[in-house]
Structures are given as C-alpha cells and as structure tokens.
Image: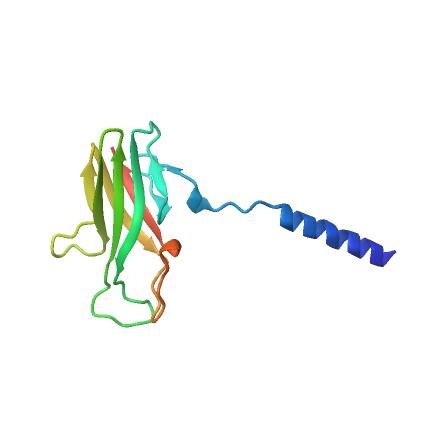
Length: 143
C-alpha cells in the first residue's frame, strides 16, 4: 500500500511540475509610471499608459565596469543602446551608466519625456563575459 501511495504521489508531482507554464518576464511589455523605476531586459519594451511612447532596450554595446572582486582606479561604465518610439518618429540613443566624460550622459529627452538609466545588473565578475540576454537595465522616465 505504501508503494502505491508513493507512486501516485510521484506521478501527481511530476504532472504538476511538467504542466506548470514558465513565464519569462523579459517577454512581457512593461507599462511605466511617471518617475517610478523599472527594469528592462535586452530586446524588451516599455510603454507609457497611453501607448504614445515606447522605450526599447536594444543592446549593451559596452560594459567596462570594474568587477567587485578587483581593485580598480575607476569604477567604469556601461553603455545602453535604446530606441525611443512615438507614433510619428523614432530615434536611437546610447545612454551611459556611471560615465559622463567625452559627452556621455545617463539621460536624454525625447518627445517630452526625460529618460534616465539608473542601474545595470548583474555585477561584472573577473574573467566572465555577461551575455546580452542576462543584462537588466533600470530606467526612470518623467513626462
């Protein structure tokens, strides 16, 4: 009897595990709220509640941040390439996190919106490349 109960429990557990649908938050469009931080994955879009403005994180072309386990003279920076989209136009901009030299900036204005990069994850590690799919960039947008 104990063996039958064990196999029935195992079968039920295996059915439950295989029938659960895994959702990837990076596949979902994010609706942003004025001045509230939100996170995007590479390839993911965020739209304002009216649907009139969309921000898409295209790629991380450069990540020169100093790994936490390394002593560096400077902290380094990360560039985030974004696409800004309205009904009538679009533009591509590169925003830098933690570097304001040589004309770099962490924010831009477009169609009455002020877009700013406020964070990048994951942290870098010595001798480990971060794949594009693993990046998360935190933004705030103000109208």
